[in-house]
Image (cartoon, rainbow, N blue to C red; front, side, top):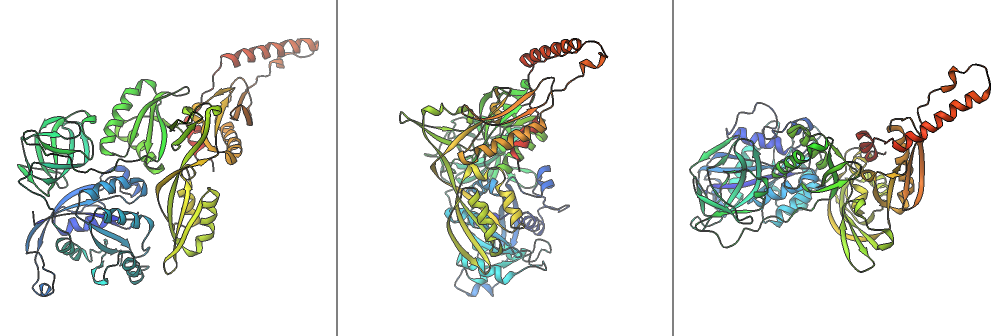
Length: 607
């Protein structure tokens, strides 16, 4: 156990985590690097250049302690072969749950900071997450080979943030491989080895799982106490289900079977589980014959930030969609879903996501990995509704809102947002946040010309386009991170969209009263362009309660029925026009209006 080190790599987006991970794997001769970002194996990750999933991999490193270094007070570990379990994590705020799960399975973390950009918002939030779990932090400045690198200024920022000595900061480059040996030595020397009792009953924490169509569900775990052998009878603590460990092993680029894994090791277990509901991330594996007394403290339950309805385009695909979401949930534990139905779209699921990028990725993965064509409704957040009887309930969907006369008041979630930016962009960023009903809590200089702004903003305001606008007004410099703070009373109105007097529940939204009329007007204008013309007039109306606040009309397609009348009495023309009018009226009663998928998406991107 003294020769095992478990560590993860944490950083802001695009600071070079995956490239550094490649260099570490190459240096320890774990794999042959044939292309960039070997651990990002999903097509989506390669296309977008972002890490979506955490990836665990084992390396073997030959460490030799030089006598010259051992002269100080610190006692260096003994020379020999060390097993290093590395977990590469995502950097985007929408995938922070992946990071928190990785951190729970490690004793140390490499904190990567880009030498050209310095400390950013996600760097700080991931760092705090690691410090909360008492991880040993190894600061690394990456990309020092870049012409625009400012290693000295960034070093000042790290010293200020961590309070460490300058000598502890490693300068590295994922491109040239500089500093990689220093990182590996630092992991062996500074990261503590796992602690646990190999003789105690088995306790292993499940931190991830994947679905394999041939082998069933494969769970990834880290052993806290005891050991597990191939063929052991095991049970999952929270679900109480019992299985036989058909295969256990360690994770390299492929899965390598082993006869036994013991305390401190990270590995996988295949036990022929077919049902996705039986494996929960954060559960504890133990032996059936000699179970442990209590489960390991898992991770806190994930709280979805954004809710949207996901419906199959073909209603017969409902059960397939359920199975696909269950399989996807294994691989992405932050996705939550529950069944719901809509008048316009039939049966589907109300899904909870951590953010808009997360929602987009889930939609893409459903399409690519499971061939599911789905419609996603307008995303919204959850609200607390207090009625006049003193009761309260959480509502994720505008259609679940009780009658307005019954509501005492509505509370919406507020977030504490941290924005780190260049001082030149303070003005436009403040205007953006104040337009979104934000309140400035504090403003402080991080270092030099960089400022951290802390705002309280309603979550509903940042859900759709806040991040894109922030990036464009700050020319890509500002970094953004947030966490849920509290619920606060708010003046909200439910905005309904009616087509020919029929409400389309998938387009209804909850919005602030001050914005409701302008939003309704813009939605009507947008839908007028997108709904195809019919043989009759289509009235598109926006309503708040019983009051219509905006209206647009999609004109009917008309045929000139009087074209064949030349000369003669005018009553012949009138007769034909009356006949056409009656036909249009009848058609309006039986005709229905199809809302194309484009319309749902366009409402999201109203700007």
